[in-house]
Image (tube, rainbow, N blue to C red; front, side, top):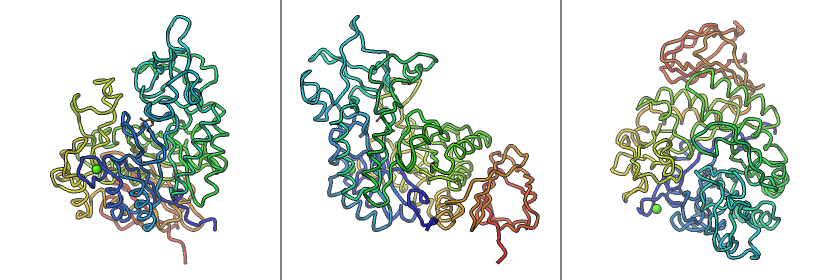
Length: 536
Ligand code: GLC
Ligand code: CA
């Protein structure tokens, strides 16, 4: 019973940025019918769930992260009927569907905010955070917006400021108002009743602010004002836990539902604190999004997360998402996929849910944009110091046709010029492509109880260029060896001499494995997996 496959724990979750995945009506923007049409591809890849970045009605000031109606679909993405079709078609293939819930703020075009800003005594006034100017006529406190500038916008109609931790078109909800909490629970219920399998909660730990809104201490240097402060009062308030408990109670009334929080300013400790049986199922730890290409920095990230998570919290690993440059671009790998294959082997053999970001499986690179093509609000604000997040949001590369099979119209962001060779069709035909490496690894994980549930055990060895670990389960033991350097490496392992290991996966030509793994020779950037043979 304990070993029964649980999709969000043992499976793999694939993030889709819907605008950029597949366009069914050729308006240049990806949509829900487009995703439905690609489910067979996702099924063949072997993923267990898809997480959709927001598809609700939205003025798209932050590309869907500014929601103007929580219980409908934006016409640009389709309709509720298209959503129901997607759910049905996904479930037929045993693929779960996770919705992105953006509940820290709404759009300023949400009817709640339209009401709220009308007058100081409007019944919705207290659904948002309004304050008088300071005695000297300035912002109510020193808080900054993550997207640039102060976190307060003055509204002349009523002579007060409203708080927005993100774009000024994203006013923060007042979570201290019980009516807000009740309305949001109804939103969760709406999607659960439609068959939605889970939620990704956008910046959930920012919902509550300190009731007195004190100034944050300014302690460090940073490009953005936001980075210069210690965020003591504008996030991580104790009131968060009872709300998560209410969410969880509701979700537990349905079978096998899942919630994963986007931990804002995440640390492993914070992510662990917010996850557990009476709160979120999981919360993101993003350490690997920032790790340098170096075995020791990954090792540190893994050891720390594994230790902090312990037995009570189920970890997760993320190499890419819609807010950060793609790893292969960050590592400046040009068109070389060797490191990406090694990283895939690591991601898919660790103890914790692997999250993939669309296009990662074909090694998509970020596009480069001219200033005039930038769409992302923080990119517009901080160019050229920070160019925003458009780079990692370019259209999925399905084939070598002029718009990569994403659309025949004009795509909302340019397609990467490398799509002529880097695309799903071409890579499917090439046994050694990164796509086929992902497919093999996913298949291996699916069939391996050790890779799903086994303990993580580091193998002590003295070569700092390499990372070697075991995944140990009572029924199976796997050994993973990763050479982070560009040169061949020798690794001396202290393993029981009588054990017999069989190589079951390698990014390089399979070697006849030595019977005992006392000395291992790894080629440049090689990743290999061995299974311990038990006496039958
Ligand atoms: C989260 C999202 C990001 C969005 C922001 C505001 O960080 O991942 O894309 O801009 O929240 O909702
Ligand atoms: Ca479309």
